Length: 434
Image (cartoon, rainbow, N blue to C red; front, side, top):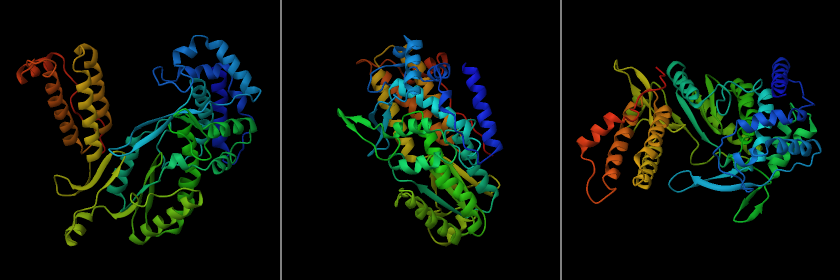
């Protein structure tokens, strides 16, 4: 049955690509038991539970009966999502980012809806968006930024930040955007119920009149649909035809850059962006949105104006105007200073907490943390910062190993010998842009 649903989704995707104006009227029936079983299996097994307290394994103990009951409620329109469990994670040294943890059953349904929407909207989404899409990732967005600045006539960069995007998405506009492609009232009702489900915080239910909570499987897809109509499509169809010279948009989720040739065009685009987002109830952050000169002539311009050359941050990396060994312009990038400091603090804190446990318990986890860091930040031009991270890790590791007891347990020589027998991942460039 799941393979049959996958075949139907392929047909939906094919029809969406063949006719950009076609409206789908029958989609909710795809949320059958076998399809939802596949959605359940694709979920993370160790993810934190929602307000119901049920984990992945708990729901799977009587999976068949649970899915049959779930499908019956979906068909009778008696299914109502539970409020998400509100938790907070560190955003930076001063701020915390709110997350909404859905109940396990809601995660399953959200996953199913997201797969249906993906089959439709992958045909519509523009090439400038990279976030939360199949076969697309953040390093492709970084490669596009690199190639555009290196090989296109770019002299200005608009660094944009949408203030509290996920908390301020208009539900009414979201439903209007979905209705451009979807006329299935049952599926639209289900999506609206998820938007209105709210969240639980300190024992109180908070009803949501706007926003889509981060943390669920559906939010990234809804965010992409919303920004497709508000930003991507508008920029491609309207803005490019109204400004002089070259301009290009690169977006990853709600984080985006606009790369522009002329100053007047850049200033006009920034003004148009503010007006466009205000129309849909969103605001560009006044302190984090700016237009800067940047490109192959930025170093000479900065020297002439007696200032430092501009830099900008995108996806955790600081981009700057560098030089190749031959003295030619080269777009450089390094780990953002704030991000680097935060990651180092978190790793040192973790090493302090686990130092008294048997090393065989936490040594593989440390190796996984290092592999993950190098897999993300191991990009062309960033060898110095990932090498520095490896050095900071080794110094902190030896420090906390020596504080497991009152007597030192490792000299640096002994520590090096131990690493030779039980090696940790070494810094390396994983993503080559040049």
